[in-house]
Amino acid sequence: MIKTCKTALTAFALASLPLIAACGEQDETPAETATRDDGTLTLAAGLGADEQLDTLRRAIEQSELSGVFEGAASYTMLAPRDAAFEALGEEGADLLREEQRPLLVAILRDHLLPGHLTPEAIGEAIDQAGGPVTMTTLGQTTVTFDRDGDRLSVATGDTSRAAFSGAAIAANNGVVIPIDAVLLPPKG
Image (cartoon, rainbow, N blue to C red; front, side, top):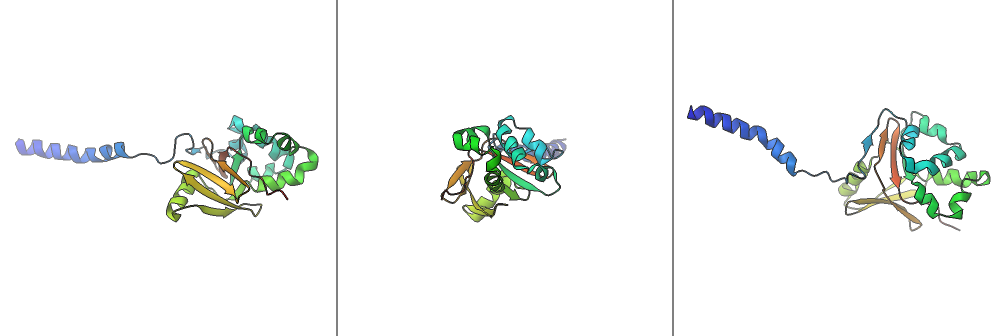
């Protein structure tokens, strides 16, 4: 009987180890920026899932790039929130005017990356590289991803910088990553 009890206790202790170990693990991605997997949506529908992206949706419609977000190719959209456009003041409002369409298209292309990149994958790449990582946007601009503690950010050289802001949305053809600023080209 004692041997049976010891065997049962040993089996119970071994079975409990994964549960105990799981209690000590922490997700390195802050909950407010963790990716929500809405893989049944298109990228366009994913943009519609965040009410703080209304200005961006209008900009995409104005630029006539909407088809890109409904297609089969996979893209990651660095999505400036409404407050980011508001922070631009008159310049942000002017971007939505018909005569500014070429500039708007260029700016939006600088917010698009090829592929399906989540904040978690970007954070992993930064960790593996031991520092910032760079990518080229569809607008042929180099962006640099970096981390300050738990906070991820993206920059276009010395021109502009934006922090990841809110939960990313994984769609069936890409990822929407909300950011807190519009990445603008250098003035000149």
